[in-house]
Image 1 (spheres, helix red, strand yellow):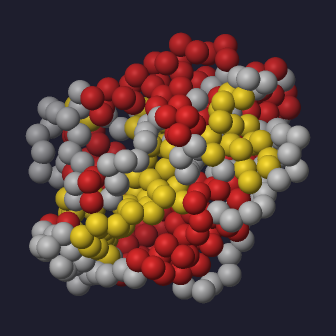
Image 2 (tube, one colour):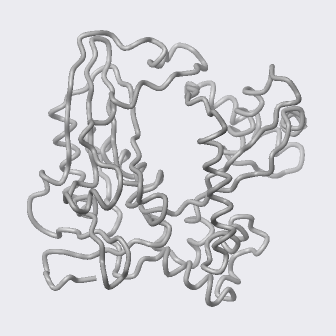
Length: 346
Protein backbone atom coordinates (compact mmCIF):
# COMPACT_ATOMS: atom_id res chain seq x y z
CA UNK A 1 0.00 0.00 0.00
CA UNK A 2 1.33 3.42 -0.88
CA UNK A 3 1.87 5.69 2.11
CA UNK A 4 1.40 8.86 0.11
CA UNK A 5 5.16 9.02 -0.29
CA UNK A 6 6.28 7.58 -3.64
CA UNK A 7 9.60 6.62 -2.06
CA UNK A 8 8.06 4.17 0.42
CA UNK A 9 5.73 1.18 0.44
CA UNK A 10 3.68 -0.07 3.41
CA UNK A 11 3.59 -3.89 3.49
CA UNK A 12 1.01 -5.39 5.91
CA UNK A 13 1.77 -8.59 7.81
CA UNK A 14 -0.70 -11.39 8.58
CA UNK A 15 -2.23 -12.76 11.77
CA UNK A 16 0.52 -15.41 11.79
CA UNK A 17 3.05 -12.59 12.31
CA UNK A 18 1.36 -11.51 15.54
CA UNK A 19 0.92 -13.00 18.99
CA UNK A 20 3.86 -14.90 20.43
CA UNK A 21 6.14 -14.40 17.41
CA UNK A 22 6.05 -10.61 17.76
CA UNK A 23 7.72 -10.91 21.17
CA UNK A 24 10.88 -12.70 20.03
CA UNK A 25 13.78 -12.55 17.64
CA UNK A 26 15.62 -15.54 16.19
CA UNK A 27 19.35 -16.02 15.66
CA UNK A 28 20.78 -18.38 13.05
CA UNK A 29 24.45 -19.15 13.65
CA UNK A 30 27.41 -20.69 11.85
CA UNK A 31 30.92 -21.67 12.92
CA UNK A 32 33.43 -21.17 10.09
CA UNK A 33 37.20 -21.49 9.81
CA UNK A 34 37.66 -17.81 8.93
CA UNK A 35 35.72 -14.84 7.58
CA UNK A 36 36.56 -11.56 5.87
CA UNK A 37 34.39 -9.13 7.82
CA UNK A 38 34.65 -6.34 5.24
CA UNK A 39 33.52 -8.60 2.42
CA UNK A 40 30.72 -10.08 4.52
CA UNK A 41 29.37 -6.67 5.51
CA UNK A 42 29.56 -5.33 1.95
CA UNK A 43 27.78 -8.39 0.58
CA UNK A 44 25.04 -8.13 3.23
CA UNK A 45 24.44 -4.46 2.38
CA UNK A 46 24.14 -5.35 -1.31
CA UNK A 47 21.57 -8.04 -0.46
CA UNK A 48 19.51 -5.56 1.56
CA UNK A 49 19.79 -3.03 -1.27
CA UNK A 50 18.46 -5.54 -3.82
CA UNK A 51 15.86 -7.03 -1.47
CA UNK A 52 14.26 -3.76 -0.38
CA UNK A 53 11.83 -5.36 2.06
CA UNK A 54 14.80 -6.07 4.38
CA UNK A 55 15.74 -2.37 4.33
CA UNK A 56 12.37 -1.53 5.86
CA UNK A 57 11.39 -0.96 9.47
CA UNK A 58 8.59 -2.32 11.59
CA UNK A 59 5.67 0.08 12.13
CA UNK A 60 2.22 -0.27 13.69
CA UNK A 61 -0.60 0.62 11.30
CA UNK A 62 -3.77 1.99 12.87
CA UNK A 63 -5.60 1.43 9.58
CA UNK A 64 -4.77 -2.28 9.52
CA UNK A 65 -4.48 -2.70 13.32
CA UNK A 66 -1.45 -4.80 12.51
CA UNK A 67 2.31 -4.67 12.27
CA UNK A 68 3.55 -3.60 8.86
CA UNK A 69 6.90 -3.05 7.15
CA UNK A 70 7.62 0.46 5.86
CA UNK A 71 9.88 -0.20 2.87
CA UNK A 72 12.15 2.47 1.35
CA UNK A 73 12.06 2.15 -2.44
CA UNK A 74 14.99 4.50 -3.01
CA UNK A 75 18.13 5.75 -1.30
CA UNK A 76 21.13 4.35 0.54
CA UNK A 77 20.47 1.33 2.77
CA UNK A 78 23.80 0.95 4.58
CA UNK A 79 22.23 2.15 7.84
CA UNK A 80 19.45 -0.45 7.51
CA UNK A 81 21.77 -3.31 8.43
CA UNK A 82 23.16 -3.72 11.94
CA UNK A 83 26.67 -5.20 11.72
CA UNK A 84 28.92 -5.79 14.73
CA UNK A 85 32.17 -7.67 15.32
CA UNK A 86 34.19 -8.70 18.38
CA UNK A 87 37.31 -10.79 19.00
CA UNK A 88 38.30 -13.34 21.66
CA UNK A 89 41.96 -14.22 22.34
CA UNK A 90 41.41 -17.96 22.74
CA UNK A 91 40.32 -21.06 20.82
CA UNK A 92 36.72 -22.22 20.57
CA UNK A 93 36.27 -25.74 21.96
CA UNK A 94 36.39 -28.51 19.36
CA UNK A 95 32.97 -29.73 20.59
CA UNK A 96 31.49 -26.74 18.76
CA UNK A 97 33.39 -27.21 15.49
CA UNK A 98 32.48 -29.60 12.64
CA UNK A 99 35.00 -32.30 11.81
CA UNK A 100 34.34 -32.88 8.12
CA UNK A 101 36.32 -36.13 8.10
CA UNK A 102 33.73 -37.96 10.24
CA UNK A 103 30.45 -39.29 8.88
CA UNK A 104 28.32 -38.02 11.78
CA UNK A 105 28.93 -35.82 14.78
CA UNK A 106 26.89 -34.49 17.71
CA UNK A 107 27.65 -30.81 18.21
CA UNK A 108 27.05 -28.57 21.16
CA UNK A 109 25.85 -25.11 20.30
CA UNK A 110 28.20 -22.28 21.27
CA UNK A 111 26.74 -19.67 23.65
CA UNK A 112 24.37 -17.24 21.99
CA UNK A 113 26.61 -14.30 22.96
CA UNK A 114 29.03 -15.31 20.19
CA UNK A 115 26.30 -14.88 17.55
CA UNK A 116 24.23 -11.98 18.82
CA UNK A 117 25.30 -8.55 20.01
CA UNK A 118 23.79 -7.59 23.40
CA UNK A 119 22.26 -4.42 21.92
CA UNK A 120 19.94 -6.39 19.62
CA UNK A 121 16.25 -5.93 20.50
CA UNK A 122 13.76 -8.80 20.63
CA UNK A 123 10.15 -7.67 20.41
CA UNK A 124 8.50 -5.89 17.51
CA UNK A 125 7.36 -2.94 19.62
CA UNK A 126 10.90 -2.14 20.77
CA UNK A 127 12.23 -2.42 17.24
CA UNK A 128 9.47 -0.18 15.96
CA UNK A 129 10.01 2.55 18.58
CA UNK A 130 13.77 2.58 17.94
CA UNK A 131 13.45 2.17 14.14
CA UNK A 132 15.90 -0.74 14.38
CA UNK A 133 17.01 -2.60 11.23
CA UNK A 134 15.37 -5.92 10.41
CA UNK A 135 18.64 -7.82 9.89
CA UNK A 136 21.48 -7.86 12.44
CA UNK A 137 24.76 -9.68 11.81
CA UNK A 138 27.35 -10.32 14.50
CA UNK A 139 30.80 -11.90 14.08
CA UNK A 140 32.98 -13.23 16.90
CA UNK A 141 36.59 -14.07 16.01
CA UNK A 142 38.54 -16.83 17.78
CA UNK A 143 42.11 -17.97 17.21
CA UNK A 144 40.89 -21.13 15.46
CA UNK A 145 37.57 -20.10 13.88
CA UNK A 146 34.81 -17.51 13.78
CA UNK A 147 31.12 -17.48 14.73
CA UNK A 148 28.67 -15.68 12.43
CA UNK A 149 25.17 -14.90 13.71
CA UNK A 150 22.22 -13.55 11.74
CA UNK A 151 19.38 -12.18 13.87
CA UNK A 152 15.91 -11.19 12.72
CA UNK A 153 12.53 -10.37 14.33
CA UNK A 154 10.24 -13.38 14.14
CA UNK A 155 7.30 -11.13 13.32
CA UNK A 156 8.93 -10.39 9.94
CA UNK A 157 10.59 -13.66 8.86
CA UNK A 158 10.24 -17.37 9.56
CA UNK A 159 12.81 -20.12 8.89
CA UNK A 160 12.00 -20.09 5.17
CA UNK A 161 12.48 -16.32 5.00
CA UNK A 162 15.83 -16.30 6.77
CA UNK A 163 16.84 -19.21 4.53
CA UNK A 164 16.15 -16.98 1.53
CA UNK A 165 18.43 -14.32 3.04
CA UNK A 166 21.23 -16.80 3.80
CA UNK A 167 21.13 -18.20 0.25
CA UNK A 168 21.14 -14.67 -1.17
CA UNK A 169 24.07 -13.68 1.04
CA UNK A 170 26.03 -16.77 0.01
CA UNK A 171 25.37 -16.05 -3.67
CA UNK A 172 26.38 -12.41 -3.25
CA UNK A 173 29.60 -13.38 -1.47
CA UNK A 174 30.56 -15.77 -4.28
CA UNK A 175 29.48 -13.57 -7.19
CA UNK A 176 26.59 -15.79 -8.27
CA UNK A 177 23.43 -14.26 -9.74
CA UNK A 178 20.30 -14.32 -7.57
CA UNK A 179 16.87 -12.76 -7.61
CA UNK A 180 15.24 -11.04 -4.65
CA UNK A 181 11.67 -12.10 -3.83
CA UNK A 182 9.21 -9.65 -5.42
CA UNK A 183 7.90 -6.89 -3.19
CA UNK A 184 4.51 -7.92 -1.75
CA UNK A 185 1.34 -6.17 -2.83
CA UNK A 186 -0.87 -4.13 -0.52
CA UNK A 187 -2.81 -7.34 0.25
CA UNK A 188 -1.00 -9.90 2.39
CA UNK A 189 -1.42 -13.21 0.57
CA UNK A 190 -1.39 -15.38 3.73
CA UNK A 191 -4.02 -13.18 5.39
CA UNK A 192 -6.08 -13.36 2.21
CA UNK A 193 -5.84 -17.16 2.24
CA UNK A 194 -6.79 -17.42 5.92
CA UNK A 195 -9.74 -15.07 5.44
CA UNK A 196 -10.93 -17.13 2.46
CA UNK A 197 -10.49 -20.31 4.47
CA UNK A 198 -12.78 -18.87 7.12
CA UNK A 199 -15.41 -17.37 4.82
CA UNK A 200 -15.57 -19.71 1.83
CA UNK A 201 -14.01 -23.17 2.31
CA UNK A 202 -15.39 -24.27 -1.07
CA UNK A 203 -12.75 -22.09 -2.72
CA UNK A 204 -10.25 -24.74 -1.66
CA UNK A 205 -11.80 -27.64 -3.57
CA UNK A 206 -8.62 -27.74 -5.64
CA UNK A 207 -6.81 -28.97 -2.53
CA UNK A 208 -7.20 -32.58 -1.44
CA UNK A 209 -9.37 -32.55 1.67
CA UNK A 210 -7.40 -35.55 2.91
CA UNK A 211 -4.33 -33.35 3.24
CA UNK A 212 -3.19 -33.30 6.86
CA UNK A 213 -1.81 -29.78 6.41
CA UNK A 214 -5.12 -28.52 5.05
CA UNK A 215 -6.99 -30.16 7.92
CA UNK A 216 -4.60 -28.53 10.36
CA UNK A 217 -5.17 -25.13 8.78
CA UNK A 218 -8.91 -25.49 9.15
CA UNK A 219 -8.50 -26.66 12.74
CA UNK A 220 -5.92 -24.22 14.04
CA UNK A 221 -5.81 -21.05 11.95
CA UNK A 222 -9.37 -19.90 11.36
CA UNK A 223 -10.78 -17.28 13.66
CA UNK A 224 -13.52 -19.63 14.86
CA UNK A 225 -10.98 -22.11 16.22
CA UNK A 226 -9.07 -19.91 18.66
CA UNK A 227 -9.10 -22.54 21.42
CA UNK A 228 -7.59 -25.16 19.10
CA UNK A 229 -4.84 -22.70 18.17
CA UNK A 230 -4.22 -21.96 21.83
CA UNK A 231 -4.07 -25.66 22.69
CA UNK A 232 -1.66 -26.25 19.80
CA UNK A 233 0.67 -23.48 21.00
CA UNK A 234 0.51 -24.69 24.60
CA UNK A 235 1.51 -28.23 23.61
CA UNK A 236 4.41 -26.89 21.58
CA UNK A 237 5.70 -24.47 24.23
CA UNK A 238 5.42 -27.02 27.03
CA UNK A 239 8.20 -29.02 25.43
CA UNK A 240 10.53 -26.04 25.67
CA UNK A 241 9.53 -24.91 29.16
CA UNK A 242 9.00 -28.21 30.97
CA UNK A 243 10.40 -30.84 28.62
CA UNK A 244 14.05 -30.14 29.53
CA UNK A 245 15.10 -30.24 25.88
CA UNK A 246 18.81 -30.76 25.25
CA UNK A 247 19.84 -28.10 22.76
CA UNK A 248 22.29 -29.83 20.42
CA UNK A 249 22.87 -30.31 16.71
CA UNK A 250 23.74 -33.36 14.61
CA UNK A 251 26.05 -33.06 11.61
CA UNK A 252 25.96 -35.59 8.74
CA UNK A 253 28.51 -35.16 5.98
CA UNK A 254 27.36 -35.11 2.37
CA UNK A 255 28.46 -38.65 1.55
CA UNK A 256 26.72 -40.17 4.58
CA UNK A 257 23.51 -38.22 4.01
CA UNK A 258 23.41 -39.10 0.32
CA UNK A 259 23.86 -42.80 1.04
CA UNK A 260 21.10 -42.76 3.68
CA UNK A 261 18.61 -41.02 1.38
CA UNK A 262 19.34 -43.28 -1.61
CA UNK A 263 18.99 -46.51 0.38
CA UNK A 264 15.67 -45.58 1.99
CA UNK A 265 14.10 -44.14 -1.16
CA UNK A 266 15.16 -47.19 -3.21
CA UNK A 267 13.72 -49.51 -0.56
CA UNK A 268 10.37 -47.70 -0.44
CA UNK A 269 10.18 -47.68 -4.24
CA UNK A 270 10.92 -51.42 -4.37
CA UNK A 271 8.37 -52.35 -1.69
CA UNK A 272 5.28 -50.47 -2.85
CA UNK A 273 6.32 -48.16 -5.68
CA UNK A 274 5.77 -45.16 -3.43
CA UNK A 275 7.96 -42.27 -2.41
CA UNK A 276 9.21 -40.70 0.80
CA UNK A 277 10.49 -37.19 1.46
CA UNK A 278 13.95 -36.27 2.68
CA UNK A 279 12.46 -34.76 5.85
CA UNK A 280 10.56 -37.99 6.61
CA UNK A 281 13.79 -39.97 6.33
CA UNK A 282 15.73 -37.59 8.57
CA UNK A 283 13.00 -37.56 11.23
CA UNK A 284 12.87 -41.37 11.26
CA UNK A 285 16.68 -41.62 11.41
CA UNK A 286 16.81 -39.10 14.25
CA UNK A 287 14.20 -40.96 16.30
CA UNK A 288 15.87 -44.31 15.75
CA UNK A 289 19.28 -42.89 16.68
CA UNK A 290 18.11 -41.02 19.77
CA UNK A 291 16.20 -43.90 21.32
CA UNK A 292 18.37 -46.86 20.30
CA UNK A 293 19.73 -47.38 23.83
CA UNK A 294 16.95 -45.84 25.92
CA UNK A 295 14.44 -47.62 28.16
CA UNK A 296 11.01 -48.47 26.80
CA UNK A 297 9.06 -46.66 29.52
CA UNK A 298 9.98 -43.10 28.65
CA UNK A 299 7.25 -41.13 26.78
CA UNK A 300 8.17 -39.34 23.56
CA UNK A 301 6.75 -36.05 22.26
CA UNK A 302 7.28 -34.89 18.71
CA UNK A 303 6.34 -31.55 17.16
CA UNK A 304 6.50 -31.07 13.38
CA UNK A 305 6.92 -27.71 11.69
CA UNK A 306 4.97 -27.68 8.41
CA UNK A 307 5.06 -24.94 5.80
CA UNK A 308 1.65 -23.96 4.41
CA UNK A 309 3.26 -22.54 1.28
CA UNK A 310 2.99 -25.78 -0.68
CA UNK A 311 -0.54 -26.74 0.32
CA UNK A 312 -1.96 -23.30 -0.57
CA UNK A 313 0.46 -22.42 -3.35
CA UNK A 314 -1.74 -23.89 -6.09
CA UNK A 315 -4.40 -21.28 -5.38
CA UNK A 316 -2.11 -18.44 -4.27
CA UNK A 317 1.03 -18.44 -6.49
CA UNK A 318 2.51 -15.46 -4.60
CA UNK A 319 2.93 -17.73 -1.60
CA UNK A 320 5.79 -19.56 -3.33
CA UNK A 321 8.32 -16.85 -2.38
CA UNK A 322 6.49 -15.60 0.73
CA UNK A 323 9.11 -14.65 3.34
CA UNK A 324 6.98 -13.97 6.43
CA UNK A 325 5.49 -16.51 8.84
CA UNK A 326 3.78 -19.37 7.00
CA UNK A 327 4.49 -22.34 9.25
CA UNK A 328 2.14 -24.36 11.42
CA UNK A 329 3.32 -26.53 14.31
CA UNK A 330 1.68 -29.91 14.60
CA UNK A 331 2.31 -31.77 17.89
CA UNK A 332 1.80 -35.53 17.60
CA UNK A 333 0.18 -37.57 20.40
CA UNK A 334 2.68 -38.75 23.01
CA UNK A 335 3.97 -42.30 22.54
CA UNK A 336 6.66 -44.53 24.02
CA UNK A 337 10.16 -45.29 22.82
CA UNK A 338 9.41 -48.94 22.03
CA UNK A 339 6.58 -47.88 19.70
CA UNK A 340 8.92 -45.38 18.09
CA UNK A 341 11.50 -48.05 17.29
CA UNK A 342 8.87 -50.48 15.98
CA UNK A 343 7.42 -47.78 13.71
CA UNK A 344 10.83 -46.83 12.41
CA UNK A 345 11.95 -50.42 11.93
CA UNK A 346 8.71 -51.55 10.36
